[in-house]
Image 1 (cartoon, rainbow, N blue to C red):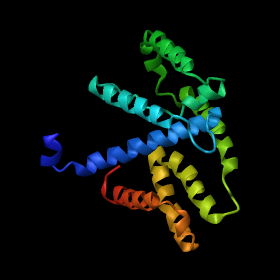
Image 2: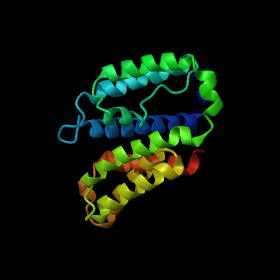
Image 3: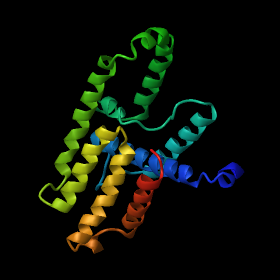
Image 4: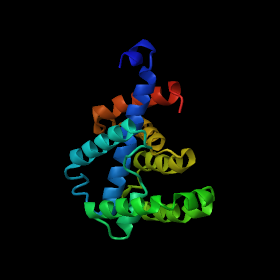
Amino acid sequence: MSDVFTHGLYAVVFSFLLVTLFDTTGTVVGVAQQAGLMKDNKLPRAERAMFSDSVATVAGSMVGTSPTTAYIESAAGVGAGGRTGLTSVVVAGLFVIAAFFSPLVGAVAGISAITAPSLIIVGCLMLSNVQHIRWNDFDEAFPAFLVILTMPLTSSIATGIALGFITYPLLKIVKGKWKAVHPLMYIFAVLFVLQLLFVPH
């Protein structure tokens, strides 16, 4: 921890915090919406999902694995009917079996045709949720459109969410609806501006 303060890595820690927090939040909410688990636009026991993701991320980093966090590709499992933790257990078991075939997979992993079809299906499944956006209200539609557009262009859920957090309160202010925005939105908007401007990503 002393190295963080000694070498001035505040920006890096801040960047990772925002990216991890909102990348995970966006993924969890998106998959939960696809699974029909949202109630009154809220995810029941969301704190448990975020806590388990945090523990998995920290534990994974301690043993040198790639980030063990929520992935938007989980929507493929949801689209196939998976709704419980049993789906994750089955997928984990299949990954253990697939590990024995890693040399074969590695030989063809660089071919985009291997992963592209599943990602297209995931995108199609996730896109069904845009029907809930109020497209007739520009101050609601434009931030949503910007998020949808920038996520694939930047290959980052967090960057898309950041631009949404910035443009949403700005448009509300312009339209005189600034009171309808929660104060935390303004704080996060400022933080995301600082992150996009001053933190390499």
